[in-house]
Image (cartoon, rainbow, N blue to C red; front, side, top):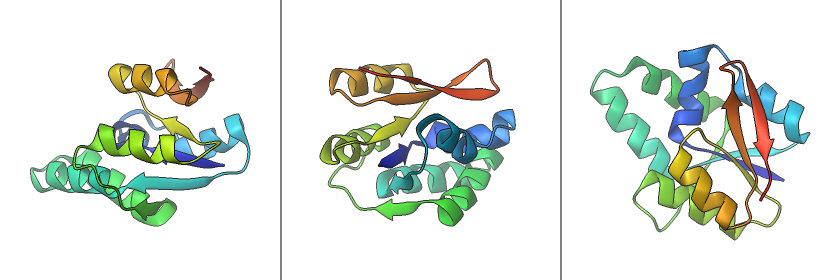
Length: 123
């Protein structure tokens, strides 16, 4: 199984002190962590503007995720492309609009619950 991380999921450890990688494993078991290249670019732009959460997220992505290339340039669209292209994938996000799009596409979504743990919602 692959688990795709979006930008806000990767910023969660810095913002809420939650290890999203350990939490994802707790929720779904073993998995391969991936992040779309568009998300990395989005985080890099935020970090260049001085966003410290984005800087931490970039480092976490570098250490824990495989960066995958996509045709999409927008982070959310790239997450959707990767998730829909892999059977048995799930996505970690707190973005309500992206969550809705993923569930419509039959992709399970892991999201932050009570600012201290991840929970999964199945389509």
